Image 1 (tube, helix red, strand yellow):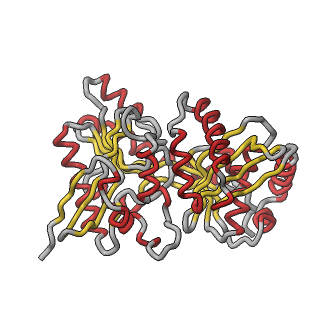
Image 2 (cartoon, rainbow, N blue to C red):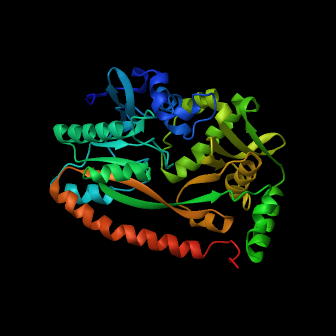
Image 3 (cartoon, one colour):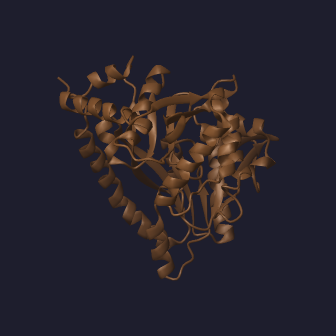
Length: 388
């Protein structure tokens, strides 16, 4: 006899215990090791909420979803009620505009995602052994909530391929995108990686690193207790500079960077310092298998310093610590010349209005092969030596 599953929606991550959430989000870390995905952990999502980066006034209203069977939490989902489409990196502004021009109301919508984090990971977080039941219950509940509340749509962004398969089986639409990731092919050093590149590309990267490292100061990689409160103050200044130029208003609050101090063992800061004072920096989170580049900023402009701190130093660190890959965030074809190759990303979308669903489906039918073709073309332009 199958056990019934009950699904509830919470008003914040604090309404579920860390142990129950993480039993679904990162069961691989229950032995004390690192999680595969640091962004879906209870403490990272708590940092977003407690710091005011999401919640009142942000357009991201937390509505985490929890599925229970026989009193046990078997699945959870980071879910948000959205009043805009900012901070998602899978762009649906055109869908919203078209629907509203036709007399519909696109917002609010439901978003299954980690806010401001274009990193692929599970969005339907299930306890081991409950994958099918947990995913099915969450997908069904999201659809029922959207229909019942008259919402236009539900979106699972940067989700996994198996989640897309489950969602499309339930009538959701599949969207693809592209990012650039660096993959460790068993390198023992950065020079080993360079040896994999075509001669011209190898020489260009060596010159680039030489120029960057000659900016007039020192570059340090810090993690754990080597990260001090003043380093967060510097990173906040860098983030404000970049966020102000990119988005007009930075998404994260100053308090979020203070909250990250509790996660410093899972953080890598790469700082460029002049006379001991940070003038530029890159913030990464460390997963069990990957290094995730997130934020960069500077107070001084120096040739190639951005590439050195965000890409080359990340590769150096990943090789030294035996990580499989570096994911350096959304977009950026400039990453290709630095060994970051194009990879496919996935999202799933439920549109409740039949007309909107048909229009979006037609669009995605054309977009998916276009994305695949772009990835194939860019891969041919990569810096690696041609295979013999």
